[in-house]
Image (cartoon, rainbow, N blue to C red):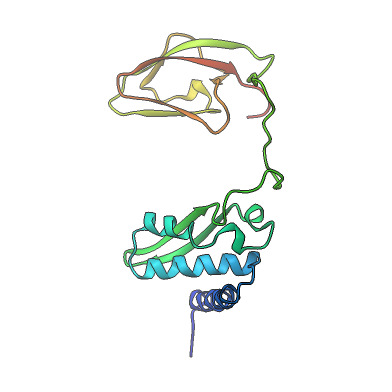
Length: 191
């Protein structure tokens, strides 16, 4: 029998998932490799059966409870991604926190202190009026240089060397025709 590398990977995944199923059947806790294999195999089978991708993601997040995996597994696996074959073709399926939310002592966990956090301390802050004169919404992400904005977005102040004063990873959406007052902050460090 000649198998493609993809078919070989799928059979390996299935074998590891079968081991996980046997362990679950006898009440054993799953470690990282077997827990991941189990969820990925179920995702691939749901995709093969033509289940909608959003439903696949929802079901995948409910396959294993935190009490079915060894301690530390939810912390070690913050997300699972597997390429699954749907009737329409392959799609990458991403499942966040497949074994429950990570614990407060997980590597990389963020513990927020009490009180307010001041953004970009010591840098110049300004207020600007941004107007979207275009026909479509425009998204502006946190660290995008404002002097490189879509030409449809106009400002009442000079924005060279500034970005939005919002937390990293956040964005502002300006609807077509919308005018909004925003706080901007001087960029710092390397771009």
